[in-house]
Image (cartoon, rainbow, N blue to C red; front, top):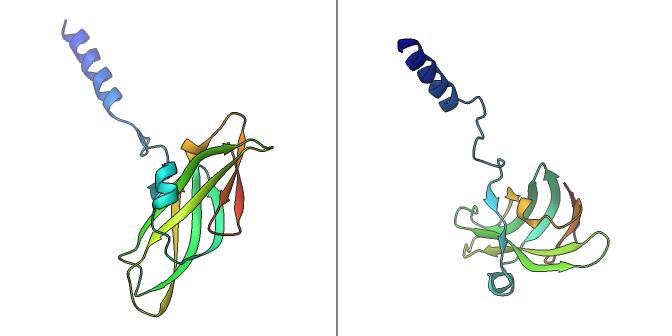
Length: 141
């Protein structure tokens, strides 16, 4: 009986320990993509310049710049329009929304990542078009 209790205790201990630091977390992106036609149309649209796009795992890294004092008060969202354009590959429209009320003249560049795994469609790729820039990027999964 004592041996059975020891085996159960060892089993429970092994189940509660994990070497996976990301257990329960899909990736290490800074933010989630918001999928909302209403937000896509109505979210703030502060002036910004998208400098570079890159996909690492399931994170879209966006390097962008805007005027301000330092960017600490900026509110940013990456918003999907909820539309899937039927082409090859399929396309989705996204918009980087910026609410910027800073009144300084500095030009700040930042880089953020967004979890894009919820933008997957049938097949294994989708073209992500950033509508407030001239850039798009192919997301393959």
